[in-house]
Image (cartoon, rainbow, N blue to C red; front, side, top):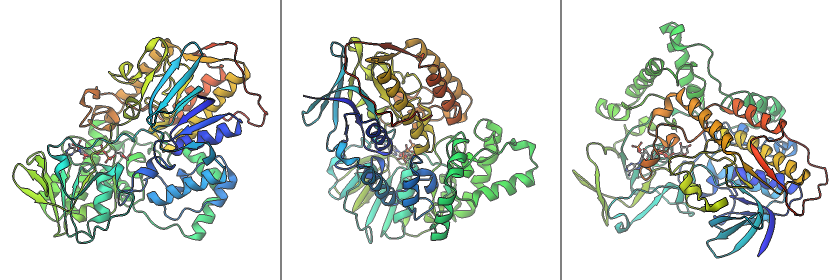
Length: 550
Ligand code: NA7
């Protein structure tokens, strides 16, 4: 059985950066990845139209000037393939592949009290021991295909978007169904609607979508971006979400109706999340303000969709704009003006079963060549739940989190010694422009590991009082925003996990600036939220090359 100083789980954006940091620390570590290659989200989601909604230059890692200089982004909102190539480029440049073991899905991680280490078991039966365990398992990596009757009977091609086939499908001339109209379904629909013979969209509840306004990055624009990287990252550091966008300091009704309309027209015509995260500051916290803006977007939808009945079906009536994740689109509403596209309202005409040839609803049967399930994820905690984490005194993480996650900064859990949940539930890192947030978490965890090693501390355990404090704070922050009240993956509401819906956020809603203050303070005060223990153990000889990062 091989023993490591550290094991990272997951070779996505977060795990790759943590691997870089541990390699700099000269740790003897291993990265276990369930996929057959690296990339995480950008490896798995091979569905048509997949891309991020972050400005590309804000999505790259900021830690290496050389890397920033060498990489050219091609689109302002890069497609999946570009981001996957980027992550491969990073792994090659820093020689990180040698630490990675692919096709290694974890089945369990069990704390060994006697030896003060974790025993890791993978599904292929391999066993590893490690002093530190770092999870980088993603917040949207546990897909939830629907549980329709007859799902397996369909003879054509069908898949959940997360598990889309590696080989690209030719959609041209095909009869296609898309079930689900969240951010993923909207991307798929925009990407294939023009090519397919016909497209039937099965919508349970509509979402408020907004135009992405993607475009190509010219050579001169990229050169300019490279000159400005310091300012770009500084700007992202100083917004609550880690994007460029920041809320307008004015409240909605402080501004005249005419000026409001002008401001919103400008946001609607601007690229990216500005419409969501750069709106008036009370848009996501005040119901009246939110309704006013929702009415503006509803007007836009009515303008863009020719059939008034279809437009009404596409306008959400059960939640306000931005209180669920805003899908970003490229001609989404115009798709419904095409003759080859049909919208099925599942509220009124539910799916009865999947048949050999298609989908049978209460009213009609539809035949398809391809069915795409864009039905979302068991978000944030789902990827933890499928691994059996057993901590001190036999405590099971799955059972501990049954009524919602409880953590210290979303980074550690009492009774789970030497476990760091990078990008875990309740963490500030997961509610941001992801790479910006995870750099913060990884820098913090690396500094913490260096502190432990330097002070010859064999293991740490987060304090239960610290968990209480953090949980109260997470709840307090959730109560200030409207999206904590909505049924979406932010609150853990999902087809397979209704029990998780408690009307509170799975993610930290206080923003990355406040989150950074908490964890920086923790570091400055030498980690008071953790009990620290020493036993006879070998510690790393540090070269001193790695310096503190926060
Ligand atoms: P989402 O945003 O959770 O959307 C899932 C969609 O699938 C949503 O429209 C659901 O309707 C629908 N859904 C789920 N289960 C069913 C069943 N059984 N029948 C019909 N429709 C169903 O997931 P996405 O993958 O789109 O996006 C997740 C994140 O990935 C996104 O926020 C980005 O950050 C990237 P509902 O609204 O629940 O009625």
